[in-house]
Image (cartoon, rainbow, N blue to C red):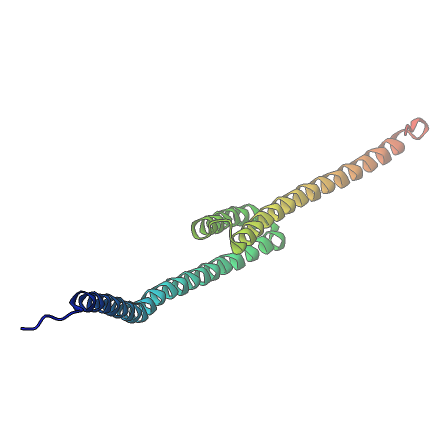
Length: 167
C-alpha cells in the first residue's frame, strides 16, 4: 500500500470539516428547537397575562357592583332618615366588604387599586359629612324650638306683668 504524502493535512482538514459540520448542525438544531419551543413558552406567558387581565376585569366588575350598592345605601340614608341608623350599619358593612375586596384583589400600587381606595375613602367621608349634617340639622331644629319657647315665655312674661319687661 502506498503512503499518502499529505496524510497529516488531510486528517486535519477532515477534523476541521467535522467540527464545522457539527457546529452547523447544532445551529440548525437549536434554530429548529427554538422555533418550535419558544412559541409554546410565549403562548404560556401570553395566556397567563390574558388570565391576569380577565381576573382584574372580573374583580373590577365585582368592585363596581358593590360600589353601586354602597352608592344606593348612601343615597338611602338621606332619603329615609327614620331608618338612618340601620342603613348606616348596612352601609358600613358593605363599605368594609368593598375595602376587603380592594385589598384582596389589588396590590394597592396599581392605578385601579389607588382609584378604588380613593372611592372607598370618599364614601367614608361622605358618610361622615351626612352624619354631621344630620347632627347639625337636629341642633338647628333644637335651637329653633328653644327660640320659640323663649318667645312664648317672653310673651307670657309680658302679659303677666307689662310694666316689668326685661330684655
